[in-house]
Length: 365
Image (cartoon, rainbow, N blue to C red):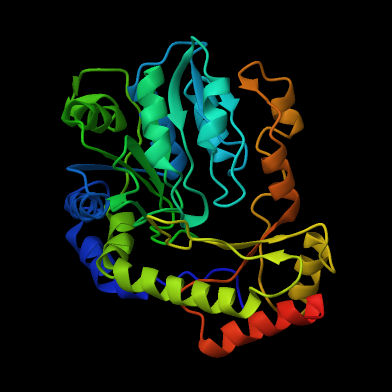
């Protein structure tokens, strides 16, 4: 089986052993070292490590002091953590449609969702390509909105040379399948000194120093053991990302002429980090998306449907007053057509050829 992703943290063994032998296994100097490396990649002075990517989103919204009924505009085509975080922070979610060219929130659809209660714009940089921040930032400024970037899948991605996580408050996931993983973990990035300070106090039960409480806080801390897993990956992130880009190019070259199949596009001014390589299986294709997925699985090719439904299209959200659904036809169509193929750095040339050949065979191309 060629897996959809591979987790490789073997390089971290010396640092993990160093942590174990030090006796400092909770948040400590290794977390600080990891935060410094992450801040450098995001191009900001502050990176605040937390226990997972959902926590990064929740804490960021909490730090903005939203009131009940305040609204966050985001995309309907995303992992459920985006919505869950908005709800956990006590806010209300609204949704703007996406663009099929980059799978991200469409700036032209945002203004129609703004109300007097809207406080935050939360773009999701899906699959490793950033949303159109060149248009979203002015929109946020026009309406007086804070920007919280769901950058869970986009560590190292850039828009016109500026990194993900540097346009507002950046929120990253370090889950096992991400381009940089600590098994579980998350990072918040910011250029705001006061906000970074608030987040650091918040994640530590509201303590600035031991038993010096300044706010009602939480245990959002990351451990030194987790940080030790991530540091070597941060050090070789450029090489890992370049491998993903080479693999994506090989897949696109091999699949670009398959009738009914749309390969992903890297838009001008953006550096894609290829968390996922996602194709669209059109209505005129020889097979449906689900048929393609099943046949590839039979052939030993890992694949994934990210995501089979819109984020609000589940019974648990339909009657929730904090979830305000909207008509999003592009996102609906993409959810019916999207399929992700392996693009991870461990793929060999032979495996890439196998993937291309298998897809073409299913399509009869």
